Length: 239
Image (cartoon, rainbow, N blue to C red):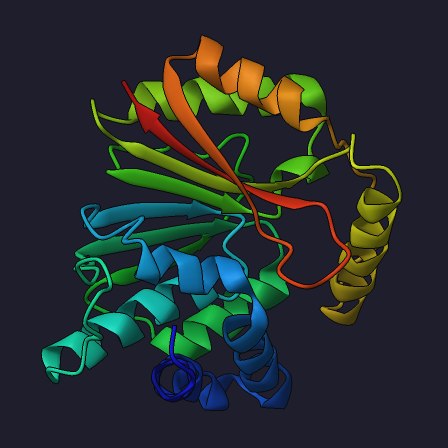
């Protein structure tokens, strides 16, 4: 992604958070500007053919603002040559456990946004509906392994043939890099005003085995960029 285009997208996607306060605005700018999974989603078109997206553990809705910003950029005729097709979001629903994040999202998008809806709730218990894609970015490791497996099975049942499940996990088999990643995660969680949670990380091979057993085709990619982390994106499509 070229730097001028990235800067434009970050500006478009983060501007709405000014109404949610300084923390929400600067958190969005930092997350969208430097977290490579957001860039990969657009460059590779990972959600381009999924108008109905369910984001579990959605936080303040940064992913949704990113997709809407990309749609706006494309509508202005400035979509970069060589990228996959831009996203065309039609119904973006988030489920978030932390009330403070939900409040920031609702201030940013407003109560009656035609596309975005952010709900307060537990992703392990929420009705998943009938999405085209489900995303969980950096949140699965906050629930126990039995809850992870039960939720993954429910996600598979909710998706149509060809549906997408996109998640990012920390590879517990990555040694010292995983421990660095884990420490940064705790710092960010604390900065967002939340208690430090227990984490239930697993090796990448175990994640892949569970997802493939459910009927997903799984593409795993390192998402650590130039940082000494153990972040792995799992792009899963229903066979």
